[in-house]
Length: 177
Image (cartoon, rainbow, N blue to C red; front, side, top):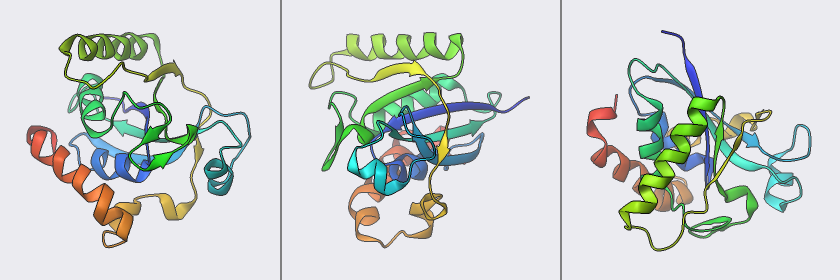
């Protein structure tokens, strides 16, 4: 089966990459920037909030091994979709919650997942996740790719990324490699 792509923004891309790269059927995760107005932005520009981009991961996956709905379920567990432009101590529009869809089916599934999550009533507030068309992915600098795996003892990774990875691996054992 042909590889498909999901593009998701939910805070720091190091956290998302650390989780999605461990899921079966996922062949590649690219950390990058999407949804802004500057071509080829740098991490420094993103952090300054000058470009309008979100930190994203583009997940390349085999839909015969893991479905888009599964990726969305994991996505909504590993970040807080109720906080506008923030995840934990990471604050700014670059940390917003967004699903960048690549076709009408992904858009429909994203909206359905959000509606179902809202009906559950388990969240602390309304869902602020944007559902918007995918635009150009600007890959992040090389050192951001696979950052958690390359730097597991970096303080941010130990304090923020590792607990999210552990939580996801425990909750989604059947989806892990």
